[in-house]
Length: 128
Image (cartoon, rainbow, N blue to C red; front, side):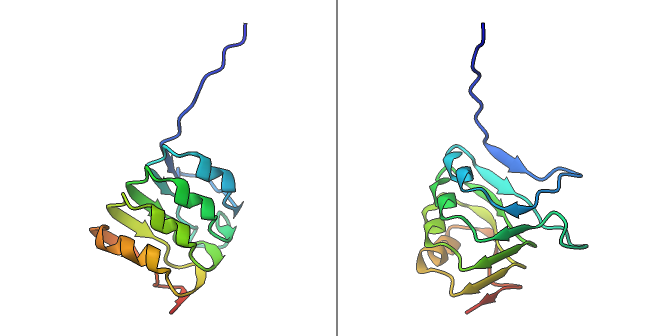
């Protein structure tokens, strides 16, 4: 007999020698119990860097309480307003050193008052 096992991913972390490349899958937004997501870009070259836009579906990760690290990649375009729905975030909101542009949406700016440490969004981007 085949038995299905339900897996609940609550943390996504970069581990040594794990090099993901390409776009962030929109399906990540379906992992609604995820409380932290960190994947740093490789400082040495473009290997292991995420590209494309930040999926609006990440705004559905409303269990996210800490550690959104998407810094040091080649992410482009603007920051989705849907990230403002991550209103339980308390620390480590990092989007710096990408190719993000435009202004930080008001909904995302509102999160900065609840993030007590490590709010890094505009550094290394073309924001403002």
